[in-house]
Length: 424
Ligand SMILES: [Mn+2]
Image (tube, rainbow, N blue to C red; front, side, top):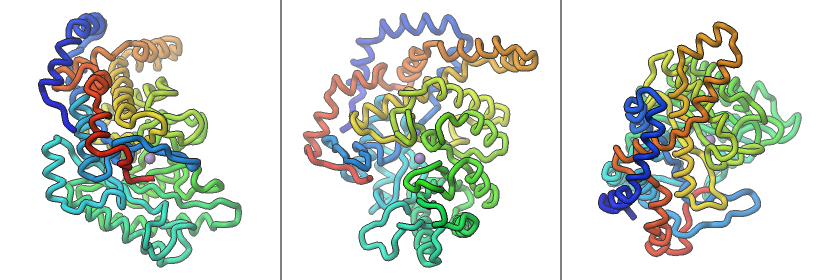
């Protein structure tokens, strides 16, 4: 289901006066509102195909209704999100859940919806029907060369699909590790993984990037072979210039200083991209910004400063993606909230005056440094985001319009109550 231009315009017309009052108040308090709005319009966040249906936990999955059951429907859902916020102009596919049958037709559909294909994701964390060898004891790290080769071949196949669609990056997340002490020789596991990743790396086209994602624990509970940013950095450094670390916000041990990790990886030219989500305990995959919005702002503050220091393009030099799961919310509403939270943090980070902050740091003026950060964080930038949406042809209130038009009800009518998305 897609919206018409008229539906969006009528919605905006009704909210325009209130929006203008809000915008005038905020824009009066900040310098360069126009430049900031331009940056907000350009900033796009990729939507993962697996977040379009309800996710579950190991205890159960409560499927939603009208979920997209084909790849084309997944593209349509992201196209719809992009119409509502003009900030979700890319989709990230996962193989084997999203094997394209007709890449040409899919590219055409993506072009119609104004979508790009973001990072391709491989899957060696579960066994597929008919698969010859099992990943129960790992994939790229496995003690058996034949299992490693199977996982390597799978990743190379994912690159092939990505090439057909015009994607330019491969994200490798490994569940590899061990559940008990003594199960694994850490050095051998590392070296096997490095050798396997090296073969995949050699199959990357020149313009591609490889993102090596890390995770502290789960599904293995004693060790993870790419367990933290240091281990990911080691792999990325040894592999070469096309390999980068990917930071998933939920993949750290409690209280990790993610903003510091981000700053140092950027400094070392090894930060490749992000998986945004939020968590209270671990890899909860909650809506971005729902639990720790200040941390998200602090991360973006480091991103903006670090990228500007290196003359990087905010819109395309790092991969921005949501990686979340929606157990109890409508996935599309949750994704609208997530994109909004990311862009709020980005806008607030842009409000930090780098010269004033540097001067405060040079003078060891701790109080002023905190005032500068919190002054930006406590600014209500939502009218700036709304102004960016209005200018880009999106809805002033995306969730409001989604509900007003009863989009989910329409999708249920089109697809049926029991349409279930592929994925976990
Ligand atoms: Mn992730």
